[in-house]
Image (tube, rainbow, N blue to C red; front, side, top):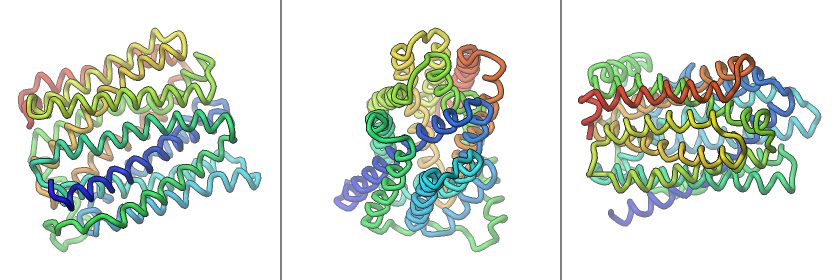
Length: 398
């Protein structure tokens, strides 16, 4: 790669690693704080749902903004908004406003800014790097997330032995500010093919019509929606309930469980980079879906926090199989002028369905055992991968 590309990769990787480490700490602190305040799986599910609902409400329009506006500036604006919103949570707590619905509203607002960030990030990568290097670049950038999700919870577990839970939100806010300072030094990307100057609604329709015409990409999105409904709610809401209520763990135990998932994801990223060129991206994606589901089903037999840590590490291996291959397929097979809108659909599938899934899990775990939930949804999620592998147009996507 050229010197400017190496420079941009180092900055983008560092910015993502730092801000996503803050994200990992935030997710842990938010869910555990609400669960501790209310001791209610239903309310915890509602708050988790609010933290992902913006992607479901206007996630597609976020992609339009990404295709019409300067993507780098949009990323900086989104990070600044998240930093300010997260900072408000400990301020309200310190001034005595211990109201779960205020926290719910701030989680919703923070997610609004994050919904703007994700399509811009995935769309700017093909502008900064050559097409021949995209799979490698996506694998490298993915390691920033895995390292962040590994180190973030571990640091949170250590911090919680020294400071109170609200202080963790300050760490997340600071991580966004550091991320902004790094993004400011990225060398200006090449100009993309901009969308035609129509209304936002017309631009959105154009992007969706393009997606409907590209049948393999379209069906990959549909399977993404279904798979994430099964997986994301248990991952966000089910895991803390399992650790706290079933395994009788502490916040630090939960932090280390989350960290073990990131360890597995880091191993998965290394495997994907090795498989690049030897196996179609579509096949890697299908295998990842199967691993994602089967390993969650194993939680049925978790009798201790230590066993849960081993199982969740295995689960993490499948995550980059899905994310890296899916991102690379879209970047390689579609024009950059549509990337903002297409990645907003991905974000809708991943984060929007998380909102529905989190609310569902909050209710269902008040009725049945969380272990039974993990077993059932794991099998259902794995079947999504089987469908992907037996469909030639999906399996053979490069």
